[in-house]
Image (tube, rainbow, N blue to C red; front, side):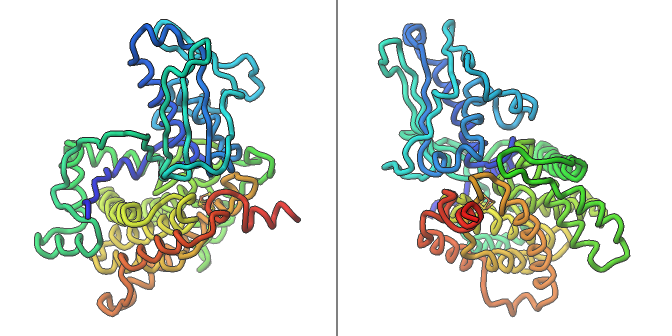
Length: 455
Ligand code: SF4
């Protein structure tokens, strides 16, 4: 089995919401396309007059609600998810009928909203989230084409892509069993293995990795802070009122109640998720749709428990190990395995973060992740009207609360008595995802997406 070679900062990506597979991935595809096109010979660029984008699969079914067209356009205009501001995204005006000018060498193409087509749902392709981007000459001659796959968590691949050459991990593993063997034989702690692998894979120094993780924590905190301080209605036809400020005010009033932590955790998860739904900056953990779960537990440990920065970084690395394993051995895309791969994995990551950052050793960390994921198995993806709002926002709060409960159970029991391991539950998630009917995988053709609309 191939070892895991995902970097921490590929899993924890900063970018605009509301969906890693439908926003961040397509924006990266647009950015990659335009960057690649600009390297073509000048005589080809001189003939270019138009660019057309075709969206298939779940990108076609729910792309309108997820703002996929806006994301591809932003990428083609040179925006990249990590640095793209909310103002830039909000400024892409749907009433603009003149189109947007895309510079290509000494030439330029004009791209209108009509050039981005929500095409057929079915497509003979290896991934459900497929988009094809084409560059045409004035006689409709195809000058260049690339077919992209948005494979979840903001990762993209394209047809014919050569495997990227990168360093090999210092401690290769592909399963939790393999990882445990390394911890035992090398007498290392979990975060030490993840750190050594990150250095070997990316060539980054320990200082650079620590700074990157601190930036992830700060960005998560900012999403929560902005969310709990923002009133109003979220974009889109649902007319959903933001609830994070209400929950936060309630939490502040009940500091002596046993319910305080639950309400605060919910408020933080709502805050980051509502920022995601607004198309603002979030951290994928592991995806944008589930980007409220980890920030909620990070915020609690940082601001309610004053946990030291190094412990937060180490907890983040433990959470990443869980996300890596889920992505490698199943999927973190709602379009592949339903919401169990998004909120379920986020909850498992958050549970392992809590255990590890609070000083529990490896077995409790694994058990906490396992319990959290186990109780999300079979969860479908059925966003109402294709917007990452209902059930997604509340579901982030539920994922955070389940993560906390999973941590409490795992830290109370005798670790060796736990009967299910993380590899087993990830295998179950993969199998459940394979058997899940397509309409429950981010198509808005089934479940809540249908029953709410029909009412
Ligand atoms: S239902 Fe879950 S998987 Fe689907 S869009 Fe919402 S958060 Fe993502």
